[in-house]
Length: 492
Image (cartoon, rainbow, N blue to C red; front, top):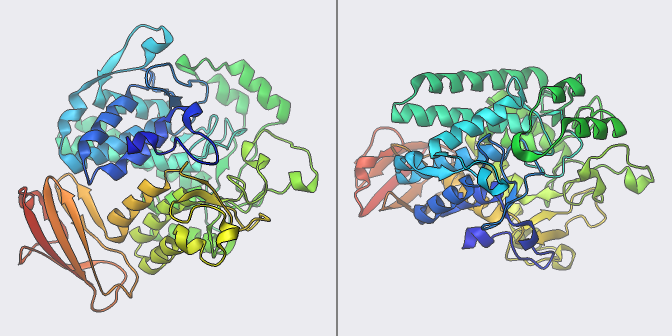
């Protein structure tokens, strides 16, 4: 119930009219996994039923009525892969992959179709790859940022990062099961293609990521696309683009001069960036986007407030500067950046971003400026481009709380689920000399004490389970015996 209603009610507006979000549910339910995987499984299956047999999905949907097939994003199908993989790592329930789930074709008066959950995941990969430039997904109507309209035939760097992660997740899942080895190899090879393409086409002059790279010939791209059961028509899309002009690179020094935070946040979390690339992105982020309240999604476009008429159909620019997607500081997005910082050992920086973006901390200096509940995450805080810099908006209508909880458990405490055990890999501030966590995993309660005598930021020098030092830093499944287990972690 919490996951289903997470974005439904707020004093800003009701979420009910939008229905449930395909992407939203699959992001939010990950927070349920350490507590009870069963409701998460039910929600995964319910959401998988909103996919068409050709890989398109209802971006928003309802309990039984047909959903919204007209808003087509490039990233939606990939979130099903992440949710299923994390669920299986948490529960060990590989049987989910064999369960048969209907596609939503019949809701549109098409012949009924069904497939196993594993087939749904394959269809998701096939759909996104099919609508990509050799692994760089075309933006379509949007990616994770629903306001990036007007970039239909541009490739999304963030979605490429997401596809990279999904391909590796699928390869890892198939290899873990020992099945379809040729397909697993194909997924791994495709992931390398994506990574190489991002490095070749999506890097700006300072070494950070271009947000979206425009196609050389948008008509040729569209002529090669099929939109399945969505009802979208190629000729209508071409006419729309011709009416406003072909897209240009977004978030690029040669065009708008802006930096966008999304691909920086996902750089480490997706696994696509090495430390050298991430460090360049981090430097640009700290210089262009970071301030005392948080990290802006971009610097903000001020064309409208300067009296300039819109020259394109990009929805994010219709927000006031510093508000929402036009330069707001999105708490959800900052969560993945914290994870990326932890992946590369930046424990102090991860701690600092986590702490300064807590509602009670952000609002501490001026609660009246903050102007929202101080006990719940907002969707965003107005960025530096806003006259209301520091004002929060859209509390409750966000997936920040579940994602931020995941980041705290998985990446700061570093207690992460895996197919074959519980990984211990903390990344914390140097002043965290002693701390503890209790984590339930495979029906076993792990009481974990951390000691950090040298004040390091990351790493586990030794892990002892019930008094016995184990090899490495992954607690084997043999210790998940249904009881209580004492764990001592010495950092170093």
